[in-house]
Image (cartoon, rainbow, N blue to C red; front, side, top):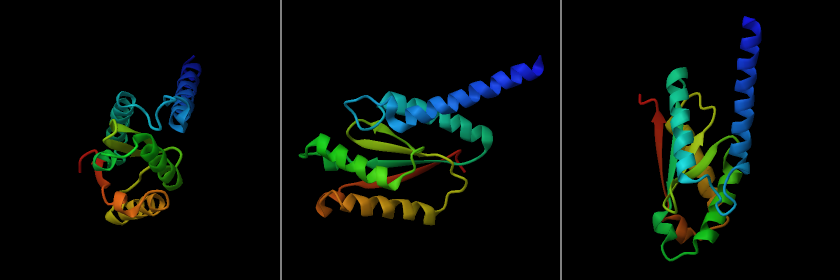
Length: 153
């Protein structure tokens, strides 16, 4: 009897991961947005923070501040260009969403085992390179990046 319960528990965990993967792959993102909505993103962030605390594995959150970029620009075009650059820079399992709608994009990196300045610098460089292919360099300078690591060390 115990084995059956464990199997069901493992199956529900596997089903949960599959459901999470479908959600992360964009199947549950609103059609009118390129990123998870703010409420959904913050909910996923809280879940990932708890998972990180429990496992004692670091969770890295990147915030991309695009507020200055969005002033006077066509938000949908900017969002599409940023999404394209992020898609080329990030893993499919990394969670992308609105930290604050049309102001800050949050990225939760999946599977982080360690966090160091070299790794963070490489991520920023890759995203900047991909952004420079789609966005004018004067506009790229209006974007800022910040990183947060959980649990706090």
